[in-house]
Length: 80
Picture: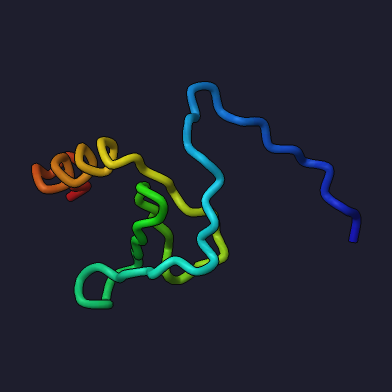
């Protein structure tokens, strides 16, 4: 198999550190029945798919997380 030559460029305005999530205390929503897990690491909130924990995690600042939670509670992301 050929070695990947893809490089990742930092996103403009991306002011979040590279977090070490290897020892994160991942918590599942919905009493462990959901597909999403979150962890609080170094003042940030990481979110991942529990079915694919090796996949990249989303990283939120506390203000971004608060906005996400408020909007989710108000139904902004309801696709039904």
